[in-house]
Image (cartoon, rainbow, N blue to C red; front, side, top):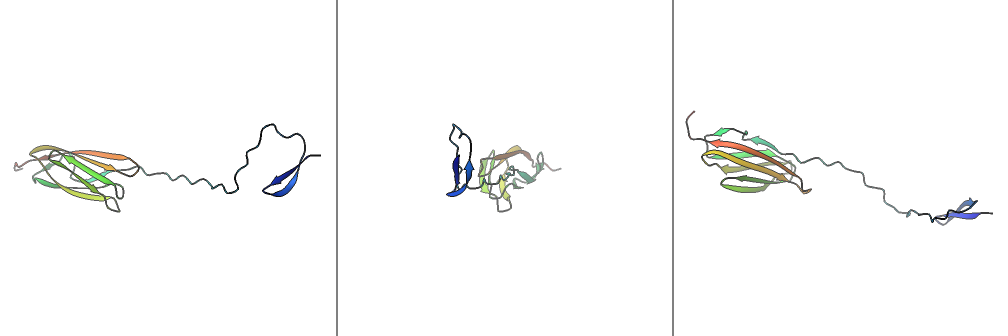
Length: 130
């Protein structure tokens, strides 16, 4: 005659014919739906000032920029380094002291996803009158 088909404890109907040799895999009743894939925005780093390859007549300069919100910012230059955290909108600012002549300044942003964005600026400090 056939086999009674039972689904989640309720009689659903009759199966007729031969049953497969392989056992079937039942799906759990409360399987959560897969989470939607949220595309991550890639970490970016923008430096507003100073402009790369610029000349400064001031020994101290301010570096201003923007990266992701609450991103860790690392600034490394010949005379030191500074580690700071960008604000909720990603803005950051720090002051550094230049050496006479060309100064290479490396600015790196690190986020919680282990992404890194990096910029290298060269700022020349000169006391010459232009």
